[in-house]
Every structure is written in C-alpha cells, then in structure tokens.
Amino acid sequence: MAFEYKQASTIEQAMQIYAETKSQNRYPAYYAGGTEIITLRRINQLNVDVTIDINKIAACNVHQMEEEYLVIGSCITLTDVEENNYFPLLTVVCKEIADRTARNKITVGGNICGEIFYREAVLPFLLTDSVLVLANESGIRTEFIHHVFEGKLLLQTGELLVQAFIEKRYLTQEYIAIKVRQQWETGYPLITVAALKLDGQIRVAISGLCPFPFRAFEVERIINNQSMSREERIDLALAHLPSPILNDVEGSNEYRLFVLSDLLEKIIDRLEGV
Image (cartoon, rainbow, N blue to C red):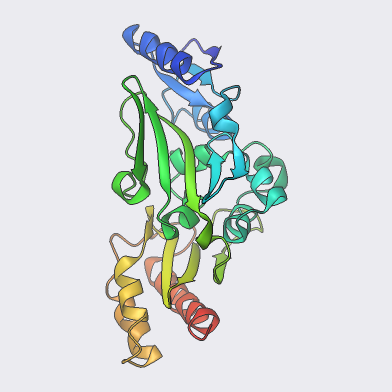
C-alpha cells in the first residue's frame, strides 16, 4: 500500500486534507509523535496510508497556565509534561510510560487517542473532570471528558483532539499513582492506578485491568464509605468492577484482581487520612 505524508499548519487545513483524502477512498490519520502509527503499521495492524502531520498547528502546542486552567495541547510530548511539571500527578503517570527516548516523541493526544488500549495518560484527565477541545469540519466543540470518553475517545470521523483544560484547583491536590509491571522496567503495565483526593473524597482511575482505561466511579463510592471496614470496602469494590478483566501474557485475571486489592490498600493508606 502506498504511503503518503502531508503536513497541516492550521486546524482548517488539517480538516480539509482529511476530508479530501477520505473522498479518495484512502485511509488518513493525524500524526504527531508517530510512534504508534509506525509500530502498528509495520506489523499490519493499522490501515493507514496517509498521515497528516499536525505538529505545526499552534493550538495543539499550547502548554501553559491561564487564569483558572492549565491548558495542554495534544502535541505536547510526555517529556514536555515531565519537564514543565505543571501537574505533578500527570507528570508521575507520564514518566512511567515507555522509556525516555519514546517519551520524547509520544504526545499526550497520541496516547489518549491511540489504538493501544492502555492510554495511561488519560487517567489524570479523567480524575480532574477535564474539558476537551475537539475540532471537526463543522468547527470547534468543547466537551467534558466524561461525555466523550468511554474507554476510548469517541471522536467523529476526521475529528481532532486539540487541547485539554484542567482546573487549577486540581493541580495541588494530594495524589498517588502506581504502575505495576510483570516484565521489564519499561514494559506494558499489568495495572496502573491513579488516585486523587478532592473535597474529602478519593477519586480512582485504572488502566490495564480491563481492555480500556476508566474512572472507577463505583469503586470510589465504596472506598469512601467509612462506615465499613477497610477490608470490607476493598472486597466490595473488587466485586463492582467493569468487565471483562484482562487475562493475557501480562497476567491472569485472578492475579490482576489480587494486585488491584493491594493497590487499593495503598491508595487508602496514602489518601484517607490527608
């Protein structure tokens, strides 16, 4: 299959190139870091024959504090997140993804929108009820992340993630993030958990347990109920997880639940008394 590279310098141009390519019965994809596109296409797991480079789109490269929000453009790399460290929880999660060489290329938007289901960078955005800026042929729309993310970002055909907004109040809250691996230090996770405490309530998001990352709303409700013992809360939380629980080369479903039990214990230890 022929492979073509195109570059867009504005959102409008990116939309136009995408639409024109689709009208030619070809398979376009937006390109920033390119790590996933290159990897999956090499092993014939991604049907893409036109990449649209969005790195020159100014709005996708914003990374700054505004009056009430931290704004992160979709082309910001995981290394940029770590070096600027505006949001420590996001930094901790991002610096555990892949290795430094890969993080120099992997972008926030690419990780959130990727085909590889872990999508760990999304966890802090789920915990902070972020607002996403999305662009399509009809214009710009803003959505709370929970309205457009269900295991993956529910993008319309040709739609582009431009930016995410996080309220400043979240940036200084107490948090914990833990990544458990079965294999080498930079391998895929068995489970990644991120948790944050706001207004006396613990929030939890999980990747690697199921074939999609998620905000564990039911788990939150249970572990914040201090009328039960800690053991009772953890046991009940494990009974109220989405399905299916992964059972793969990284670990069995039973082992994942065992590990998650320990991680919930650590989350409660770290955040319940603060």
